[in-house]
Image 1: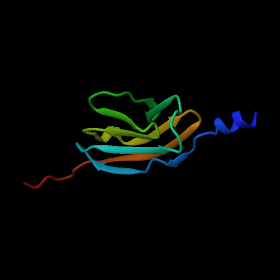
Image 2: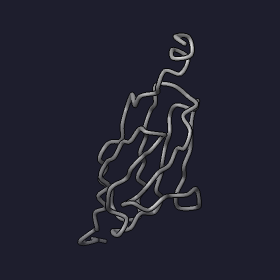
Image 3: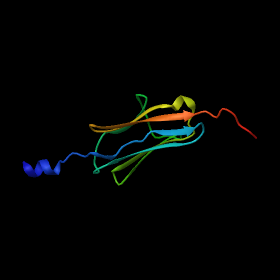
Image 4: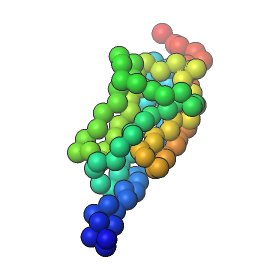
Length: 105
């Protein structure tokens, strides 16, 4: 039993999401690092809505431990709370998309 418990040691979040401010049209990247690979049920959310890999939303994983979300070409309505969930682990951060009030040319 002890060997099983040790082998099933739970993963923890080594480095969580950080609040990010970007301007309209830029990309916002969020990264969460776990202590070990193999955590199942990894999901990304923006204000409670699940995110999926597509042209605007890039979801990637490196070594099974480093999980990255990139939101491309963000708009003001993308501002909100980004949440990473892996099993029972949760990390959240704020995304603030700033408009450009005046463009000088």
